[in-house]
Image 1 (tube, one colour):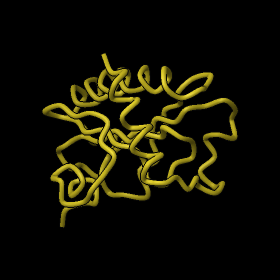
Image 2 (tube, one colour):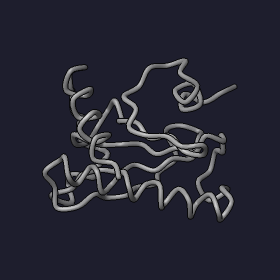
Image 3 (cartoon, rainbow, N blue to C red):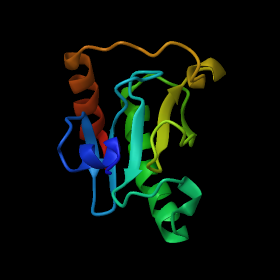
Image 4 (tube, rainbow, N blue to C red):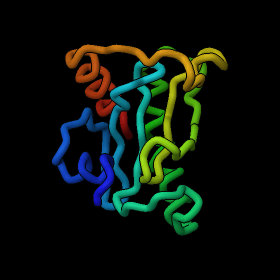
Length: 131
């Protein structure tokens, strides 16, 4: 059975898409810790991050870097953190989270509630800053 991320990639579930290429897909997390919290997923469904081939991991990092640089231009933050958890969805993925403090990356705290308009505006601003 396809993961929720595979369904998002295929367009079966709507998302706030940031970017994609032939191997990766980036979209806003709908339960963000911070505005601009973005998920990067490989298009090939693999459960565990470290089961991805080395070349895929390297390419995913480069893909993530351009998204992180765009987030930094749009969201006021000291830096963009990178987190790999992999427990909530059986599809390897990376969280890119704008950070101003260590607490900004605390997954135990309540998630933000943003409107469709807020999500859409953030996604558009990030897309416009991708090199």
